[in-house]
Length: 302
Image (cartoon, rainbow, N blue to C red; front, top):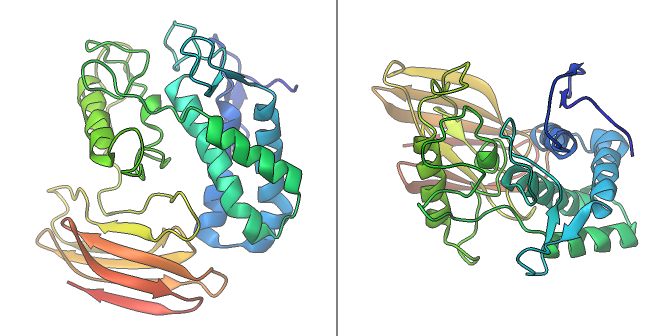
């Protein structure tokens, strides 16, 4: 097994510092690998570079996931692990379980695109995914469970990685242990409980994200992408536009809004993209259902 500094990033920055045991870097960096493919639709890059990276990290986790001996529920968990910069060393940490779950899901979505036929690896991935604890549990005060208490205002929100930039929370299906609304409500409770980012051990405030549009990853490659327009527009941006924004599936987006309301949007499907279905959502309603084809252009009016 190779070793890396506990602080490392995909752009090459590494440094030494005190850290509790954690192997989060590998699966978290694989989010960037899948996202590069999913936003660009570059199949050639995915076949030559992306898929081998995902496969290598998955093979590491095949040997480093263990049956949950505490709850004895037949699920596979990471052991040991810790929530970043928290002192408790434990097992089955929410963020690591979520990241590994997304890694396995993305591999299974990518094998057909990459034209891979390594059956043994694919079946091992599928079996591990079925047994894996996905890191989504509701706590006794309604929160998304992590190593925290109601008075914990630590700046790290790692257990919400499945909300953004991940998707295990954002795309949680209703036919699982909890309903999707229950999971999103728990994520909100956790976020509010942590405060505004200026509490103990904080060195930054919570910067606003995803005010203009949001389109999380999907569980299956044939699921429609759920694109939401202006989910959280700041009051200081009542009117404006963006052009050339990127959406998953190899899609470009132009968006215009005025007085806090969407005027129109246009989706551009790259010629290298796959055929992709997109549901365009606005103010809680689906306003357009698009069956995108490579090279197609779809205006959306509100």
